[in-house]
Image (tube, rainbow, N blue to C red):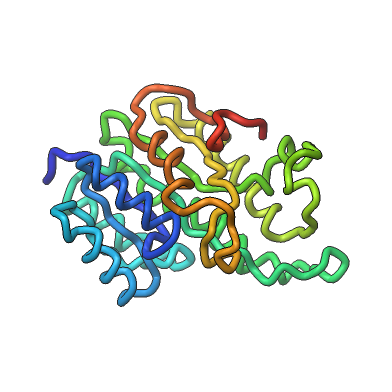
Length: 238
C-alpha cells in the first residue's frame, strides 16, 4: 500500500498521455502508465522513473476487457484504491468522406474512444470509491463540442467528418452522465487542443506538455466542478 495518490493513465507511452504521467509523477503521485505496446510502455515508464519518480508500466489495451480487469485486480492488490483515472487512450480512425462513411467505420474508433473509457471507469469504480477524493478526467476534443463547432472563429467549424467527432461527442455525454450519477466524484472532460501527436502526424500547434497542463490541473484538484468541459482557456460549452 502507498500513501501517495495513485493515478492510472491510459494510452500513455507517448504524446499527451506520457506528459500527463510525467507531470503527475512529478507531483508525487504513483502513476500506472498503461500502453498496448509492452516494449514502448516499459521504456516510457523506465525513462520517466529515471529521476526518482514512481511510474509503473501496466499492459493495457482498453478494447480488451480481460486486460482492463487484470489491471483493476493488480491495482486493488497493490494499493487498495485509485485516486485518479485519466482516460486518454484514443484513435482517429480512417476518416472517410462523410458521404462514404458507413456504420462499419465507427466500430474500431468507438471501441477505443468511448467504450474504452466505459470499460476503464466501470472496472476501477470500486477502487475509486475508496479514495478520499476520486477524480476522473476524460480526454476529448473540440471536434466533439457543439459549442466549439458552431463558433466560426474555431478551426473545428471548418472541418468535416463523422467518426472521430461523433466518438468524442459521445465521450462528452458519458462524462456528463457519470458526473450526475456519482456526486462524490469529480468527473470532467478536457479538450487538449490541436496537439502535435501521432494522431495528426505531429502537425499540431501545441506540444504534448502544453496540452497536458489542463488535464493535470483537474487531476490534482480535489475541489471544484464536476460534469464540465474544459480547454486551456477554462470552461467551454458542450
